Length: 164
Ligand SMILES: Nc1nc2c(c(=O)[nH]1)N[C@H]1C(S)=C(S)[C@@H](COP(=O)(O)O)O[C@H]1N2
Ligand SMILES: [Mo]
Image 1 (cartoon, rainbow, N blue to C red):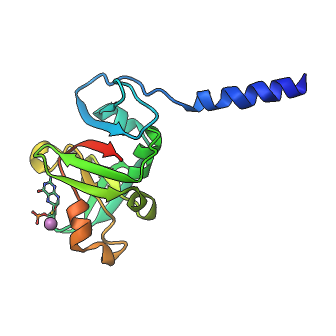
Image 2 (cartoon, protein in one colour; image 1 turned 180 degrees about the horizontal axis):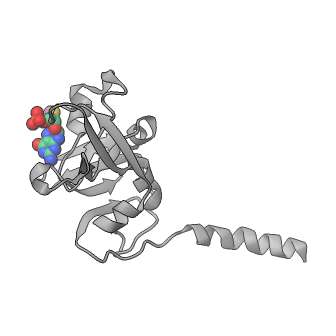
């Protein structure tokens, strides 16, 4: 009997972890597609602002080439988002409202505390100030990040991530 229970537990646990995402209630600001397990809109994962704010938040205080002085950015870590959607990929195609896009290795999100910034100095990032989402690397923690490759991966006005 104990074996049977262990066996049942072993087979039912994985389905508990194949999470379903809640449905966005407000405007969708981010759509994640591609190699992911947890979806809520066909084979995509859609997020409104509240869903992204409900994820654990991370603060990065850093200078950037686009701001005067150090700025406090807050948003979910990139790897937190990848966990939330059950990412199974190695590369991210991160696209912006203006159709700019960059390919970012998933590795970057584990090696560095890269966030999807939703606010700067306590103010929500509006589209006019490069929101609603801005990929922010912790430049001040590792000055080697201030290079053309990382800058090109610092996509602002992000609205889509394709996991490859
Ligand atoms: N949405 C968006 N993000 C972007 C870009 C862009 O054109 N649109 N340019 C990228 C590139 S190639 C670089 S080097 C940096 C710096 O761009 P800037 O020199 O125009 O400020 O932002 C990156 N993020
Ligand atoms: Mo660039």
